[in-house]
Length: 95
Image (cartoon, rainbow, N blue to C red; front, side, top):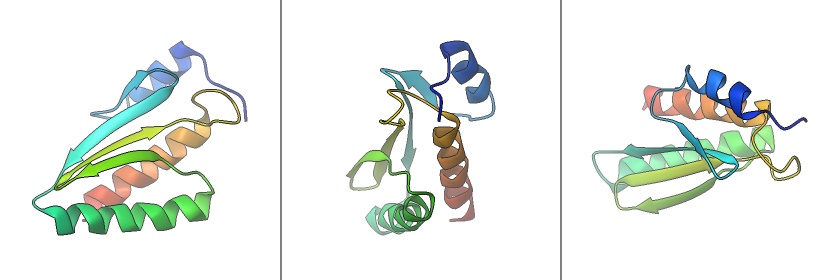
């Protein structure tokens, strides 16, 4: 999969509220009511990541979840990252 240009990334990000681009990755964070809710969403994202064979870099602290997506094989952001970002958004919305 080909690495996207910065212009392509920024155009795609227009459809993703709360996401930004920096250091060859797209990033977002979510805040949940409690740890259980955060962990439940992380578990659902983990199953989706396995299905897509595309795994986020993430960090969790109590009720906060930070996510970064990058296609390491391509050395930056690809359409694969935006497909995963869309799936993450759908999971969070369904919570």
